[in-house]
Image (cartoon, rainbow, N blue to C red; front, side, top):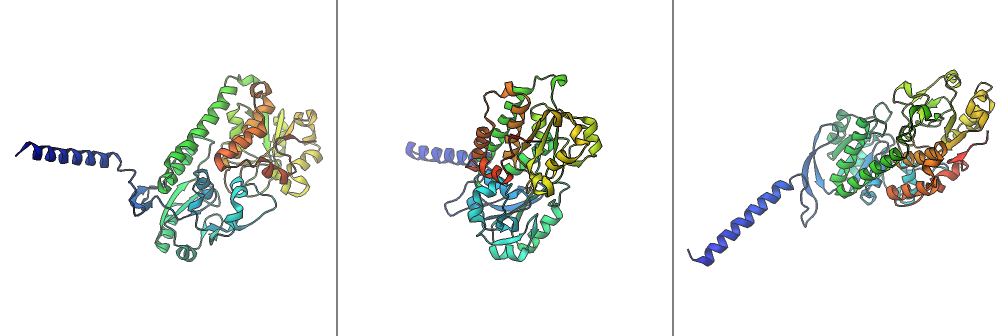
Length: 383
């Protein structure tokens, strides 16, 4: 064998070894061929093995909040159909992603009713590459592996399911992050998924740095009323694990009642006697302005310390077709500014909110969200 041939053979072997090594290292992220997506099998949020084209360019999002995640990942151009809630134009719109994108979403084909009530025949007619399907435990939009399998069998379309999660606990936060990463992998937006997760973590870390050293005895005693859940509610509607209170180290007087949404007795609010009351301003959808009207007219509630001192404030609603995470974070900065102004001296809550909205949605929408609620958000409510 001459030297020239020896070099050629060695070179070929080396290239082959490098190719094999490359394939092993990238086996979880298939390289897209020049002709389009590559099929890959992955495990969804319910432990199901699903074969999908990656990156998928034509998708549907079923269930409350599912489309919101796709917008966070800057994948709205992949949507080829919507459920009924995305085709409705409402005078008061609490979904910030819908405010940004509703003008074109209403023209897309309908594939089913909201809260995950899919129409298999409509899905077949649209013929997406993938259906994402999500929901929250204990909510009307909850889903499960069996329901997802049935939809996949009826349509012949790959269905990826996952739980929506929340930022209330580490377990629910892990669900949220898993969903973002899973969706990001399928649509080829993995870097953006990590960017969103890092932004959330950095924001919570900033709030912790500002308030984490406040001794328990100095933490303000607070209550959140009128919390929305599948519609507007009155003063007794609250969240014992209201994330903005957790992040700014406020003493939520209802914190001993678990982590899920609850209705408390009016007498309990009187007994707790919070120093500050925050009102989810979606409550004004009710007669007599809901929680606000109740505070003004109920003799027992008028005796509260927060009422006597005028420390009643409005926050933007974030439970609207599941959790609007960008609004959760924005509310936390406003609440922090109210309770501990010296620790948030550099923060203008409205400007901070629009910074957050721009990161998640590509557009500042605070005014568009707040104005239908008579601009009661981020303001002291006259009682």
